[in-house]
Length: 378
Ligand code: FE2
Image (cartoon, rainbow, N blue to C red; front, side, top):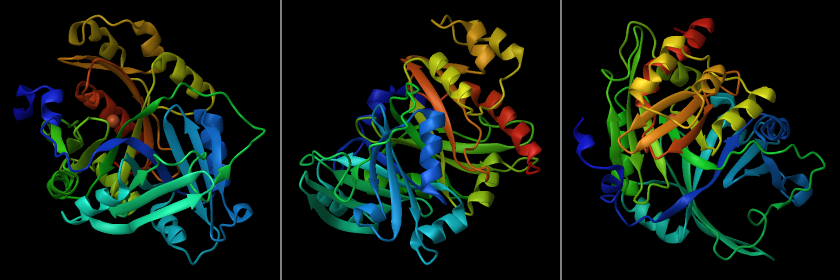
């Protein structure tokens, strides 16, 4: 792999500096029933009620519930009538991620810099104000119908943004130790990975920090290709997947068929104690991909070296282990969180490693294919 000669820090140092990003601001889902989705993310994932907008706050056409855990903010939005862009989105894609919002220092400049480099406008810059100050925002389309919003909130002290009221709920399940968004992965169509990578380079100033081809990511049946794009401080990482030819249908192809287009495949959230987090999520009903076979865990001391965690405990929960030159990581993947086999979550705990678990791809994909086969889509 040609990218292996530089460290991750050296690679991201080559990124453009015209779009400073401080991290993920929020992720907004368009869903069929936001009230119930919010209940699910509170109950099953431990998110906390933060803010609400809807008819009670003067918004006539939609309801949005904002949830928070650590630095992660999720917005769950539904339309209140059928003749609505959100309803059309849900009809086509099912519940899914519409907006990956990035926290910037200057939303007007972010729009100017990206649109002049070819970014397609979703929302021209605008300023929202209320008694708590102002939020400035703009947005451009990325792959499929997915959007990157640029959010500037340095002059805002309210719970979320103008138009939202603090959401006081009497139902407040405890959190699950989720801290921040580590990365968000997009699935794109055949021959669409390279143009998407080039778009992140040209329009956003990102750099490609890791690449995997179909020779590295394959099982007996199917394959995929992946490239990881990062901004200049590493706070914003977007791996891009494309299906590859195999004996049977690739998991990426299954996603594209059921999402009816390109979109967000998984959201990886970081924890400091994956054993505790995953135990808690399982107790609350979150379903994870099945554990790899015994042999996988027997090989870990040789493949990864010594780790702080008890291997038996990791095995009992199905947590995967991988390493790179800079350390190791622990990770696990949920099953899709809606009926269409589309969006899922990854829980990740990093101990120095900056990579994405390539050593687990085979074990992971075999597990994914067992699920795909059960759905009759392999
Ligand atoms: Fe991931």
